[in-house]
Image 1 (cartoon, rainbow, N blue to C red):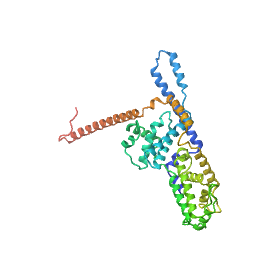
Image 2 (tube, one colour):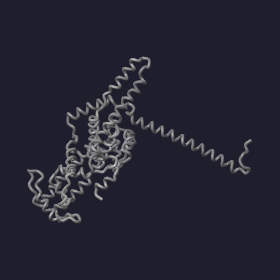
Image 3 (cartoon, rainbow, N blue to C red):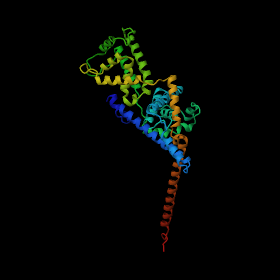
Image 4 (cartoon, one colour):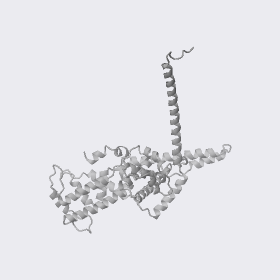
Length: 388
């Protein structure tokens, strides 16, 4: 089985892969649904406070609720993107590995496909997503140590949103990253450059002939000299690998690449962005001369490259910070008041669960007593009491 065939058996492909149109439509429906819930919640709260005797004031309140200026889809995406960057910064501060950082960002992005910042603020969800990713990626850190690194944050603030997060993730925690594919391609190219590459069965090209073809490649940039030896090829491959790796650590995580493309397509696009000629050469080694590289594959990779180029900056400028401040102020006025206190909601749910458990235990104890009473009567020498 190829890597793509294996990927198509995963939950990431079955549940979290979309077309651009489907993804956009999903976000629009989530935004409109959240806006309606915000207005309903505000109307309920205001109706509790206002006097039923003053009819004109009641009408005025209803009108103001209907005019609440909610976030647009674009504003939501900018805000979520900013907190994805903050999650990456905090992961770097904690010295978490790349897979933990990338998984946390994908958890946030998946969560906000079915939830809106107007319902749950990204600032509340970000620590929980990062802590969950340390567990799912087998990078253990205790809750106490994790919270100690976060200013003005209690353990309850991290734990309270966790069930909401896992529920929105549909309890699927596996995230397939493109970094492993990049490392495999990197090793293959290094083997070709040294003439030690094992060609696939049925291939007419030899390892030495592939090495010679690689030496004939034009330089990736006009300013660079053409490779004349295996050592020159190694340097070129390492430079392209470094650039591609940086793209996967930033642009690939922050854009919708994980929703729209497979891990193989993402790493090949990142490598092509770094060195197009070298990537074309690598792809040609995977197809016969008669077939050539499929045009559909090349157009898909070009589309992914265009998406990676649209990535938000990992260091927002002054204009971006000003825009984000405006959005956050707007969000302050259109948040769902019934969903702000996640810690309180979590405690209430636990109390409700405990009450249900206690009732179930009481019912179970009552049944047990009845059975024991019936058993004692049946064991009596003269049998149970005869009812008159």
